[in-house]
Length: 488
Length: 101
Image 1 (cartoon, rainbow over the protein chains, first blue to last red):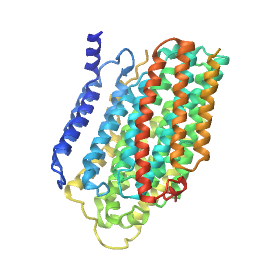
Image 2: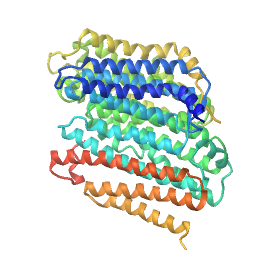
Image 3: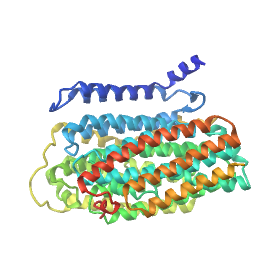
Image 4: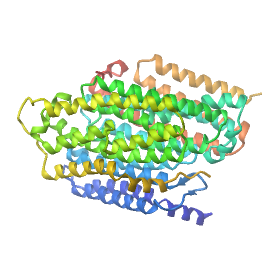
């Protein structure tokens, strides 16, 4: 038995490394002089730990899937790929936090500690194979997120964001648990792979209990990815939180939630039982609503951050489409979508972060005439906006194209149509910011400070994948193709 | 004779009263209490199902974990509420309405 656990630990190195990084960060932070102006050691620890995690994850990518810790955790290449995206997102968010003025100087190391903590929770969630671990992962992710949202201590808006996030989060976690308890009662197990064969032949009274229970279960997960109708918290929290935190929230918790919904759907609902039909039906309605409401609400916003929040709700809807089709192709396109979404989000928020630091807010007018003042920044922003809208030949187009082809291959024409119309709607508000940057003259000629050569290079370097992934996407698709989800 | 259905009825009542508290009360502390009611109804369900139906220990473990995590969540929630109170001098949920455009 003890040997078994040691072998399990061998498969669990990335998570252990992330935990070690978190402890190391706490120790290094405690060892720093009080009131020190900058803490280079903290940044170096976070960077080294996350890079090490990233390298190990990349090495694990080609290994076959295993289930460890007496079948409570599944390590497979699908999960590993999602974890790679999450590690890169954490790394990017920590870098932005170190540059931004939106996080108080004294709280920058706390940001890194909590970001790595959320990452650990997300990794647990991505590979959870039973309901208990799913709940623990979700709460690790959530509880730290509440603190992160209210990280700007003396700012009323940030405090309010944290409050709303924690109240909504607590309610949805409770509702999810209530659903889980009935699922456990009816099926008699908390393990997903043991549930799967039982679920295929459920009917009658048991189905009557299970269908609402699974819908309640979905509330907790749907809240994490901010899909309609559980999205109300998202714009408020995104707007109120400090900008690096918003960047972080739109990448890590969202992808972790997507991964767990994908795993549930592939493992439990890959059959034609009545419960599966209702789950998939509900999921497709939710995906269509999420896209439509997210994109339509994004149109009237004044703050770019809030606009990006609504647009990320729209993107969550498109990603859900990759899950609704319940096929390998769908999962692959979901992974590719997540990978491109990572770079687009990082660049967009990084640029907004500079504008926000300069003017104290991020209203659309602040972007006018940017192309004359900071050409590199403006061109990167334009590329990213086109890519988010899905214009060829950028990576956003390829990602959307993959999802659409998976949907059409399953003959879900209505969903594909809704997604297409939504692409057009999203073009409107993405182009609004491009129009302001290019055609409108600026209010003042003042330059934005803090844009050193290094930062411009980083913005440029992060934009390169947005373009190249759109042109040379076969390579990445090759890697993604080998990433499969293990179903026992 | 106390049967499974009595436990389920009690937990359903707890769950519903938790939901009503969260919708009807405007006091943030009361809303946090409502969340606790919901979490406890789930924990009760897990324990009751283990005792009467499934006889495996998993349900008991889950209810223990629920208790622990609920405590952690309440601690963080109360911390945030205290911060909010220091800034606004109020714990009324309608005062948290700055972030709407």
